[in-house]
Image 1 (cartoon, rainbow, N blue to C red):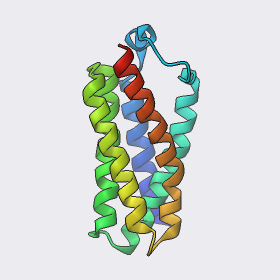
Image 2 (image 1 turned 120 degrees about the vertical axis):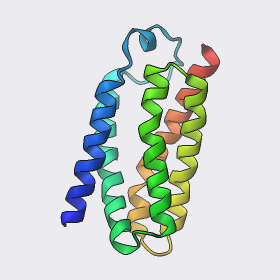
Image 3 (image 1 turned 180 degrees about the horizontal axis):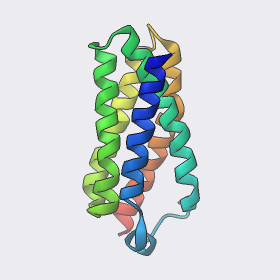
Image 4 (image 1 turned 180 degrees about the vertical axis):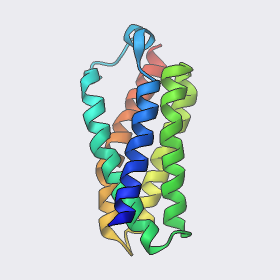
Length: 147
C-alpha cells in the first residue's frame, strides 16, 4: 500500500506542479481550435483521475518488476507526459509537442501490451489514459494544422 501512496503523491504532485506552471493562457485562447475542442475546465479533472490511474499502474508494475520492460515503458510515458505541457503551452511549439504526444501514445500502448499477459489490471488502468491521449493527439494535430 505504501508504494501506491508514494506513486500517487509523485505522479499527481508532479503533474499538478507542471500543469499549474504551464497554463494555457492568452496564447492558447487565441489559437484556432477544432469544433471538438473541450472547454478548458474539463482538463484538470480528467488529468487528476488519469494521473491516479497512472500511479496505480506504476505502483503495481514497480512491485512486480522494478527493472522490467513494463516499468521502463511506464517511466518513458511519464517523462513524455511531463514534457508535453511546457513544450506546448510555454514554448508554443505545437509541432514538437505533437511529436512528443505521439511518442507518449506509443509508450502507453507498449505498456498495455507488455502488461497484458502478466498484469491485466495494470494494463486496464492504462486504457482510459490511452483513449484520452489518443484524443489529445488528435487535438494537438488539429491545432498544429489549423495554426
